[in-house]
Image 1 (cartoon, rainbow over the protein chains, first blue to last red):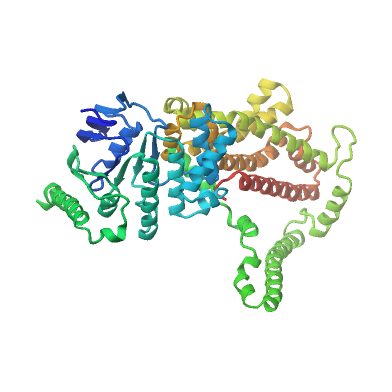
Image 2: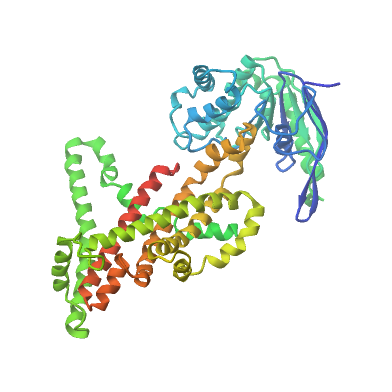
Length: 266
Length: 307
């Protein structure tokens, strides 16, 4: 079976001072177009490494990634990344941060006016059009992450890769951004891989949740399909049996990981 | 080395000097702001009173310091070393010197203004050359480990050498005073510029480079859009340090080369046993150095995205 995006028995070994370290082993995953997949696991289990390999920022030492049956071996705007710490360029305004990406991706296909309009359109999408002329240092963490999302969306990526994008935000801001992300995903139908360590976030957003075992040699432990109808409303979900079943499932998996894999527990 | 370079930057002041940032940032007006919203009339007079107090304080304390120094100076003149001129005599001489700074009575007898301009010219030429050469070299050292490995030992050996030691080499190479002095200033400025630029390039967060990789920016685009703006604060710090040291070195260099220049002026007046002129020159050199520093601080403020 070949999906839109497939991770094929992917593994990676890092050369460290204390010899080789196997971070990932046999990570195997098929993702359909338009699917929203979250990867969840304990910190240090290699979630971000999976994302970085798909992004092309790291190269797998075994297996690999296929996007529309073409091998991924370098980074590119068709796999846009929303970085954990937003990574906006501090010397550029909000507008210019997005415009930089737009100019690079659409230099040949869009006119200057179209690129300006497209930049503003994407800022509107994340409700940041009013802060277009501000510098990243002048806006809040949640706003920065919105701009980071706008920058990634503006590249019209085939796959949107999000590396714990809301990890550093307070609960309320995070909820707002999750809602915004769901709306955008419903409108644009992007294929999304999102790394998270937040169970509620994973269940709320995902079509499927990929649970990773603890490292070293981390791999896919379990994949859970979340069959909740969209659009999802966080308030009504609180009492939903399916929601709570999924939530419990993930919790159980994560809890079992700490029990079995923690050498200090033995 | 990266540690060294980082330490170098840290020690020598990426951080703003408290004195100068005080003048720029924390104004008494902003301190009194909360009162403004309470009662406009009271706060207005309160604000101006606070400002007046702030200024009195700012002038008063240094004035006391100056007075103490002048008193000690007078005491040295009257009781310890009679050869040291009195403050009053020096002041009178200063007025005399500054009343015609640009007189020109042949190449060996020119006003203090000319001496100063020649020195400044040499400093700025050497500094400019060092910036043009040092920034690209610093970039290479910061970006390429091979390049850094190859050059680092040489730089480490040459960096602690007093730039004045290079003066004979300069004279040998150029057989003229002016280019030799400029050469010495170039050597003075090149190390801080290279080291700070390299440190800046190394300090660029990996995320910025990942952004450039995801966007598939070319080497040139990455340099122009990411590396250069990210490194600029470090580069300007290196330039500011360079210029400060260069202004110190030029005085010594000109004492050795002779001819014209503020350093030569000091030495020449010493040969004439004209100590008053020397004191005047010392104060003048200090003031110019302060202005150079302030100018570079302005540049830094303009170019540093963090401010």
